[in-house]
View 1 (cartoon, rainbow, N blue to C red):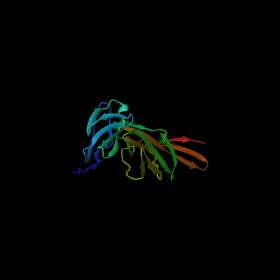
View 2 (view 1 turned 45 degrees about the horizontal axis):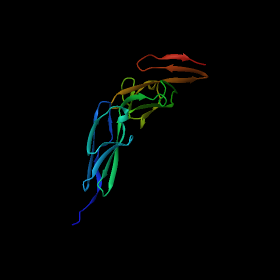
View 3 (view 1 turned 180 degrees about the vertical axis):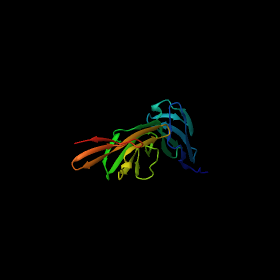
View 4 (view 1 turned 135 degrees about the vertical axis):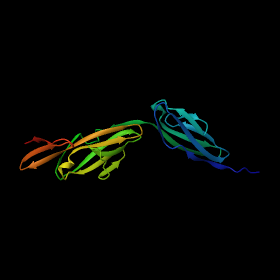
Length: 206
């Protein structure tokens, strides 16, 4: 009498996880195959076996708990392996190297690109606001860990403070950018710095 054998296959694997120190996480690897495959969980970063069962739970003790966790199946007829990852969460921090400075100058009618970038785990989402709290729904372009606001200063009201908010599941960070007007008038240059909700100040130049 022959025995029907089938290759082991991973039917479900816990998706990528995030957590902070002290949290408990659970990894699940559902398998099929005949004979029933042996299930082994391996922490890829240390090549250490952490469990010999389809479901395992453990507490996060620090950054060393992060990395790839691989489920390996074997039933003597074949093997199957797939990995998930765990990352320690981290609140957003504005990346000043990749963001616009706190003061940006623009001539009336110019197009200005304001940039805001942030680090964090999970990667923060970025939203742009005016000084009075209005959200920009157009004129923005997002990319992983950052966003760009394209601003055309067609009127004096377009000058002032703009704010970007970087947010993930852990926290929030803000970055303020003041757009200042530079006016060229027959060889004289005047810089008008105007914050929304306050009076303008004039700085004479050469």
